[in-house]
Amino acid sequence: MHQGQILLLLLALCFALAAGLIGCFALMKRMLLASDVISHLALPGLGAAFLMKVNPLYGGAVTLFLGTYLVWQLQKKTGMATDASIGVVFAAALAIGAAVTPRGDLIDALFGGLQDVNWLGFVLGAAGSAIVVVAVFLMKDRLTLSTFSTELAASSGIRVDRLDLAYLLIFSLTVLIGLRFMGALLASSLIILPAAAARQFAGRLSLFFAISAAISVVSILAGFFLNTFLFHLSTIAPVTVMFAALVFAASLAVRRAW
Amino acid sequence: MHPSLLLMASSETILTVEKLRVGFDHQVVIDDLSFEVHKGDCLAVIGPNGAGKTVLLKALLDLVPHEGEIRWSQGARLGYVPQKVAADRQQPIRLIDLLAAKAAVRHLPPEDIATVTAEVGLAPQALKNSVGHLSGGQFQKALIAFALLGRPNVLLFDEPTASLDELAEEHTYDLLHQLQQEKGMTVILVSHDLSVVYRYATQVLCLSKVKMCVGPPKELLTPAMLEELYGGPSKFYRHIHDD
Image (cartoon, rainbow over all chains, first blue to last red; front, top):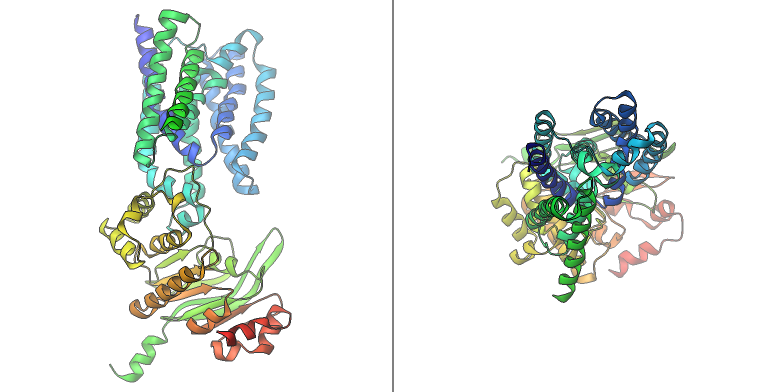
């Protein structure tokens, strides 16, 4: 393995850890599918950056965070449900993204082919992952209460709207880190699948977090090595996601057998 | 203590509401409502569906936007038991996780959890159960324990027994009464059950589109008043006498 590959693997593992943790709350908040499309908010920025020949991830970051903030504002100002507000913003973002992204780059943007990791990219990505992990840890209690009941959370002194924004932002940060190797379409799959599989086994929160993070990390490892030595696809995303889906299927089977 | 001092202490105002107005989507739910609650009172909020009883509690907790004034006296600590919480079985949240999360958010010592669980009469084993799998009675006790965490001196209770069988209902009210008596808690209670109101409330607040009034239950809960409040022949009156 050359240095770029090692950096890519290390960065992917950081992303996996963040994704596995953030997914647990997305599952409990019943916003897994809604959050799936958050990753598409990056598409207009990726496309515009491709057009302007700048690092696509910078463009993706801009529209991803703008879109996330718009989702939160829509939800707060109109009282829309999270999935409805995400759905509206998603549809617009996808259309703009499809219009501006050069045809040749569209596949990379959608499925992740931006795999040349330099030191700067690695440091930024690892720092982003660390922020997500620390934020989840710090907000764990408040998120647990607001997930259970927003009213009880508010009556316990929690500013639920701010907490929602903070959660959406670290969610988007996770997606952004994953965009490089997973693409706009698959970035959130490692947020969804490990949490869904972990839920089959975990009867308590701490175990839920641990199992989900572990499945996510193992999926990236499996995806990376299977792809490098067996499948040789241009991106590790498909193999990683298929592996995570198999783990989920296995978790269902094991649960039934119990 | 001198009797007049005692009287002063017991009539200390803990909550003052003036000209409260709450509305959603251009529809006014509560308009021009003023009342006071004194320390140690059990104020029952009664009225027909849609009169804004739950909304009033939420306004008192500052959970919904409102106009007018709501003044809690200094040192008032509120505990809230909502009407219903739809516990999601998808969530692997155990009762201990929930109580520990509140204790952490409010910087309370962890041993308070055992204290409130014992106070509501929940067995310690129930703490390890998933919240979504508690029975109706246990869940209600869990919600009360959640409210008691943080040592409130005011409890706001919304239809506490709506989903309980009669025995569990009886237990809940006994517990409520005990908290009020032993700890001198102020209780604000929304209830449909007028026999309960008659038995436990020291003050009644009637809320409806046509009428708002405050007073002791014996004065307010007359057949004529109830008919006016609920806008129909008063079967509630008979209910009180059945009891």
